[in-house]
Amino acid sequence: MKSNFLALLVLLCCSWLQGGDPPADLKYARRATRDETRKATLDAHENPGERIRALLDYQLDGDFPGNEEDKYYRILTLPLPEGVQLEPGGIEIDGKGRIFVSTRIGDIWMIENALELPPYRPEYSLYASGLHEVLGLARRGDWLYATQRGEITRIKDIDGDDRGDIFEVVSDGWEIGGDYHEYAFGSKFDDEGNIWVVLCLTGSFSSQHLFRGWSVKVSADGKMVPMCSGIRSPGGIGRNYEGDMFYTDNQGTWNGTSILRHLKPGHFMGNPEGNRWYEQAPNMGKRPPNPHSGGRWHIEMKKIPELINPAVFLPHNKMGKSASGICTDRSGGKFGPFSTQMFVSDQGQSIVMRVFLEKVKGRYQGACFPFRGGFKSGNVPMTQIPDGSMFIGGTARGWGARGGKPFALERLVWTGKVPFEIHEMQVRPKGFQLTFTKPVDPATVAALASYSIQTYTYIYQAKYGSPEVDRTTPKILSATPGKDGKSVYLEIEGLQEGHVHELKAPGIRSKGGDPLVHPIAYYTLFYFPDS
Image (cartoon, rainbow, N blue to C red; front, side, top):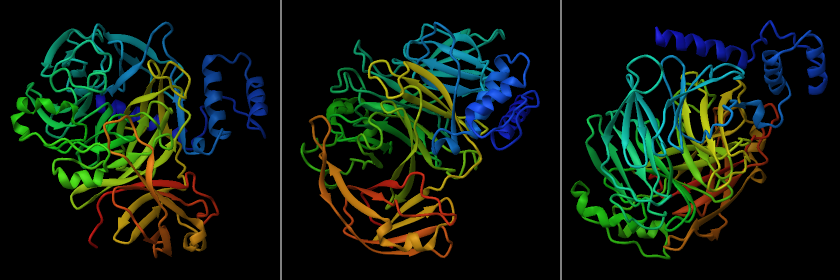
């Protein structure tokens, strides 16, 4: 019954969003401008109340989008309870369509009516409190699992009053001190029933407590296993479509810029400060040697077999500045044309980025693209719900964020319209293959003047961050449109190992004459395919 209820709710929510008529009780009077439409509609109602005004604002946002991104993906901001410091750290949904949000101050809130369009009357109730900075929520049966700073706890409501009654420690196999930066981000369950946790360094610079700077996984029965070393300051964790676990790490020591990395079991992520704990992790084997400060990633990888490549460099200030939550589109098309791709939120710039990954010689690498800006606070957790939309939580305390609000809870929904975008960017031995979300104009994709490309990398060093270094300008030799009408092969001279390949394509047009919504891509190249 719960699943049938949720499916019906999803269907009703999607129909109006994707081109359906406004509700009958809204006497909508479309005019030439937003202001004229608002006045005409309000005049048609004798006493327009809160519901009518909310429905009207929602309809106006759809008919009069503020920018190009608004046409395809809309941001719905949920009203928050007055006087509550709701700084989201984790988000989950149950079978009744209720949203659960954990906070940085240790509360878990349950929200009803959160899936309404528009969400003008959410009802908040406190499910649990007194926890320690919950930065991950996952549900299994009737249990809600919360990743706290010092442990994973499971919580259950046994008397049906919508409050947690039983609190059980699942695992506390890592240690904490009093340092503000010792964050612990927890994943959803993997296919084997494990929760993975990424543990920030002490102060983000050293490892003063057990397994700080590591990733561990915890089974349902509480067994904790160290999985990866070399983590600095994570901002989120999540699986790709194939089920492999990834995390985001932020610019700092040994990270020239923010990075999306594959948590490949038994491997070293790149920051050596936490490697002192290898004796406590016999399953990990011998401690790897420390990397040379001042080198380059691709050179050090040849010296240290355990060192994993960054799957994607997120160029600082170009693609965010504080990478955080991870969410993979598993909706099968309910979130638009990007099914199976990954989305990464950014706390500092209040944005969401899109990531395409491929495996080359057994390792993940790929491209990142701008996707959606305009969120109200600093985006951290992301969760996709069954209708394909994503709930995103924002918090600005400690760092500030472009969005301007101290905290926010928002929902990102597809309008049903397909944006003209670069869909995939795949490496070839001598260039890149681009695919698009819509048929392309063959003349513009074949014109070399439609493109420009440059490369750069980052210093792999113990100092904080890095400028873009070792710049090159490869030459695009040819652009061959694909027979499918939605792709182009770029033959390029001068691809660079270990570099970001920043490709701009402002000249490309769709078959209907539209420019790309985001005419730029950043491909991180470590491995070349043989064919």
